[in-house]
Length: 119
Image (cartoon, rainbow, N blue to C red; front, side, top):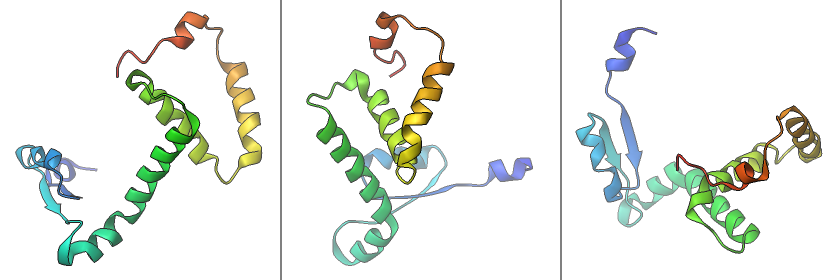
């Protein structure tokens, strides 16, 4: 891939939230589809799976944990990703966890219970 591929402008289509306003400053073309009015059908078609995935993550976290702590969010998402990636191979989950556990070096409990420092 040549340098030309990196110099082309990128296009991001979002739901129009104000948090995407910085894209223009970053030299990115920003298009938005509103959740209301005549663009609703286009929005639903473009963001159906995004909205579905966000809903699944929220329901999974709410249904599993009694209290959500911001410092543990990377771990919640990591667990969700693992379960999502194995959703059609349920019989492989246990064996994969055992393999990961046996390949991991010993770790003190203090390190296991620390929150992610980079979050």
